[in-house]
Length: 308
Image (cartoon, rainbow, N blue to C red; front, side, top):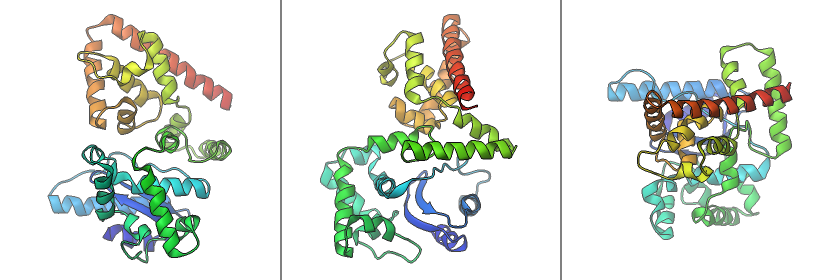
C-alpha cells in the first residue's frame, strides 16, 4: 500500500477503487497523463524488490504482464467498482458461509476501498470515490447507504454480464460501439508501431470467443459443451478444453480455470500437461486435437480477413 500511495501521487493517478488479495490486486483508475505503463511498471518493480529482499528470493514475482481494459461510462464504472470490492467474498471458503457472515467479512476487510465507500473508514486523500458515489444519491450519507445496498445485494448472485466482459477476449468494457471503437484504434496503432509486443496484441485481437471454442471442441470430441466442465476420472475432456481456451481465446490459465470450473490456473496447466502425455501414446486423440486446432485456426483466419 505504501508503494501504491507513493505512485498514485508521483504519476498523477486518479484511483477510484482498489482491492488487494493474497495473489493479485485490482485497481479502477484514470490516467490523465496517459502513463499507465510507467505507473504499473514502477509499482510492480518496487513491490517485487521489496518482497524479494524481505523473503530473500530473486527473480520475477508477478506472472506475466498486468491486464488492463478501458471502461465506458458511469454505469460500467459503478458495476466494475462493485466487482472489485466483492473480490474478498469470491474465495471458496468465504463463499460457502451464510450471507450475514459474508457481509461481516466484507465489512472487516481492510485491504480494499470498500470501507471508505460505506463510511466505515475515512477516505484517504489518495483515493477518489466521489465520481462513483455521486451516482448513488445526493448527500454523502445517502450515497454511502445506497452504494452499500448496491454492492451487497450482489452477494447472492454474480454479475454474469460484467464477468463475461472481464474474462473474455474483448479489448474494452462497454457497449458494442465503444468496444468496436477501441478495437479500431488499437488496430490502427498496431499498424503504425512494429514492436515485439504487437504480435501478442494482434493475437488477442484475432482470438475466438470461449463459447465458440468449446462448441467446436465438443463437436469433434462427440460430447456436449457442458461435458468440459464436469469432473470425470481419467477423462481427457478438460485437458482438451484447457489447451484450446488458452491457445485460441486469449484467456489466462486462471480465466480458463473459471470457465471450466477448475480451482486454479495451476489446475489448467496440470490438465494440459496430462493431455500432452496422453497424446504421445494415443494417435486417435492426437488426430482429434489436430482437427480442433485446424478448425479454430481457420476461425481466427476468417476474422483476420474480415477485419482487413
